[in-house]
Length: 442
Image 1 (cartoon, one colour):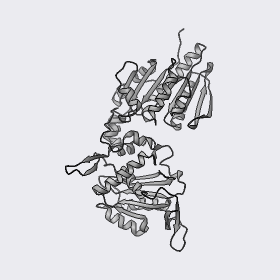
Image 2 (tube, one colour; image 1 turned 120 degrees about the vertical axis):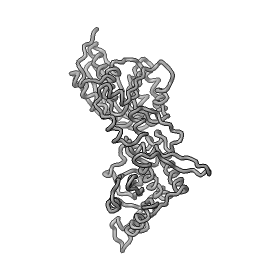
Image 3 (tube, one colour; image 1 turned 90 degrees about the vertical axis):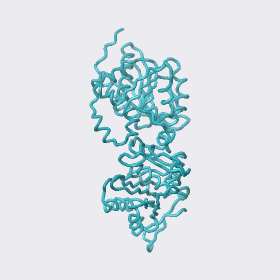
Image 4 (cartoon, helix red, strand yellow; image 1 turned 60 degrees about the horizontal axis):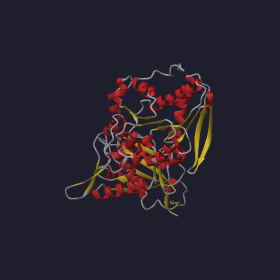
């Protein structure tokens, strides 16, 4: 039977057409950022449902994304408009999918003929919960990708199709293993930014590269290089494990004690203020201020704003060089809550070690998908000099890991203080305004 498919909702570029028309059972796509990998794969999924409907049959697809937000976007920005373009009525629903790992919000559509498409966050539990065709979206960024794979593969072994797409995320994880394996099982597609633009994607490559201003990020996110993790202090996998959709949002502040890190920079480097709130024993990023070539007055105003809006228990400021006066002025205004930190080989080793331990223990939450921050964290490297003394370096571009050092300063502010409960102690005649409070362990 010949299936006459309608034209897709938008004109596909050459690389999208090749991916869409490849109906291999096992298909892996390594795509540059924002080149439409999710959009094109959800088009194939809807097309498959359309073909089954024309043959009076039904099919089943599950989309496993790195988080609930990404799963929802795959449905709302992919499946829904594609179904409309095909003239296929759909019934959409949401429900709590309950498994051994807890409850997960799932979105599901039912299409003509009874075909169903479900999207939900990926974990080993949801991976083994369905017998269906599967789309692993941004698989290199899935937590526990190896465990997800072990749970998933027996489920799809009975002839189901598997689609795996992602941008690289370092030389680790199941996506890296699948992409670099020497086999002929997988149909592999590679689309870097140069190929995408050559095939018609309207992007200004030089403008993108200059705007990103980070060669590591450009190499990984757009040129699809797997960066060497051997000398990086924080691997991309470790960084991704602490990303959370709730981090980086000031409106999420719950009124608890906060810890601030402030890295001083002016002409060549960034001035960064990092604010985290202690929830249990986890530091949640609430806000990050970045300034370049700002006056000292503007930098101090940004710091004062943070100190007024949050219950700051302690702030650690880079006191090196131009930071001497900055620390002195801040201590005059806020007293013992402000601590200056001189950047020496010893102090940087202590802060970097504390920071890495936070990442390894998952006692830190940073925003999801913040490319400059992720690249900044990854660029820090530990090297050993001729005297055997370790030191930390970062490649120079528009900054040298200023965001990372602001975070490490904030973690240092919470060191030895963040494992117990905290309570405010008012000073200055019992004034209850949090600006005049010190915080002490309860």
